Amino acid sequence: MTDELLVVRAQLGERAAWAELVGRWRVPVWTYVRRMLDADRADDVTQEIWLAVVRGLPRLREPSRFAPWLFTIARRSVADRLRDEYAAADESRTAGEAAAEDPVESVVDRAELVAALAGLPVLEREVLVLFYLEDLSVEECAQICAVPPGTVKSRLNRARRMLREHLEERGYRA
Image (cartoon, rainbow, N blue to C red; front, side, top):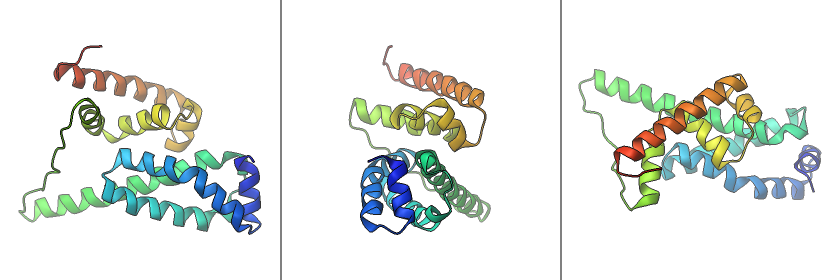
């Protein structure tokens, strides 16, 4: 059964269709959020995303566009969380408190890649995650990020270069 049909059935109140839709997209959404945030924050933000989806699903006019719509909600939720945390950190710095640093996990190759990915600016990290890890097209990434496809392409190019440079600094060669 297609996502489009599941969305229509869920909009009509069919609980089994809703459950199947969530079952299909729960892991991809959590994975996207986890790659943008740490595990504790990812769980909270993912719950917020699904709550927004429940509230917004009846108003979704194009059921065939469910995946980009879902990831747009996810992107906004992640951005809201980051914005709130940056604002709080900014307030604490202006109050004279030292900013807390996240502990760095180091395991081996995977940990290095995760660290390199986490070290990228949010906009570049986001397009890498959406394009490569969530397997979305450039057009879908553009719709989710609310930018032209050319901007997505340039962010992907810049993100790949930055990731490559970071890994080369650590002794990895392409």
